[in-house]
Length: 477
Picture 1: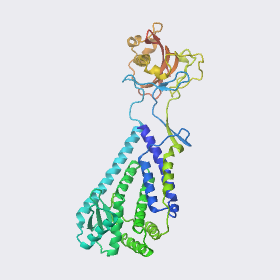
Picture 2: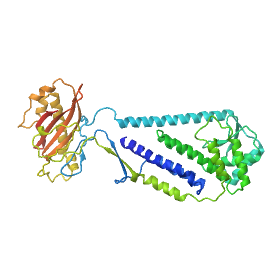
Picture 3: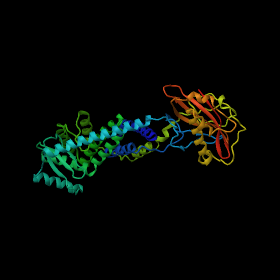
Picture 4: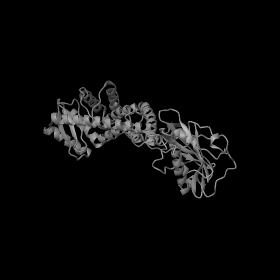
């Protein structure tokens, strides 16, 4: 969960930067590149939002270290790589109980996504219900003949139904399986109707409804990011601009002017009830100004292949710019120390602190080439079980239980009286000194219930006849 949320937030942040940059340079690109390419470049960006994983680079320009959860106990032999101590007993409470912050964040994100999708589903259902109730099939032969003629000319053979609907103010199309074109109940001249039907058929041929569905998924995943909503509006505008461009492609200025007048006429009345999964004629002064300028612009334009490649590489290489890592709450594990008695170690709230003194003469048996060798070895498993149960017996004041883990040369009785009939909670544990493969020190952090401060049980275990015995155990505060 933690890695997923970090990856999602990093992706959302880097993609937001790409979105804002692309939106800023779109007016400049409009002067040189075809609107169709500008529209489909947005699809690359949407894909980058849906697929959050990127190649990571160690030398990222911006490095973000996110505080992690309580770290898994680790230890280090010599200068080797720190290795996590595996959980070998179901009752070993390595981490604080309860729900972590990352689990809460994941739950909030998931709940927000579900709420967003449910809201969109309700809107779409209400729209479908309205369309079925107030629509009537067009039976006019001239209109149907015009529709079929346009379909044949565009290579469309799918059955597309045509309806009049009193609840829509402008033409629109919806339906993935059974597409429908809704026309408002206003008298439309034959030449304007031809423009309108061609406009909607271009939407169908280019699969714009599926494009809108992909945008909706990206918006649902990043529902918390306001920039994604700006992106969705920009894509809707580019969708209409590119469709306008396809309608007037290879036409003269007079035809372009006629189509502009048709657009002005049909966007005058906008429908109040809409759905994200339908085409619509965008209105508004700003939107209409962009559309009219784009329609009347007959200058030759370049394809946007180069711009698309730049966007793709920007998304892929976003890992080079930003790297997000999880920082452990524990300090680096302790290397072998020259300290002889655990009492000399000053307990630190961060628990696995590194002593300033090191023992250069400390050596480990060649049998363990790596830390993992020890952890996976039966000796390591026995060590963890013995250390935990000895600490538990010590905190419970159970001398009889603890005696089974004490070495013959060590006794402990006085401190056990401190914990009789006292409730406590073990928070975490860790290894802080491995003097040799037969002599290892560990420490448990615990908290008395009702108190804020924490204390430590430090112990030294030695291996005798393949069994781990406690050679020293004491309380630290």
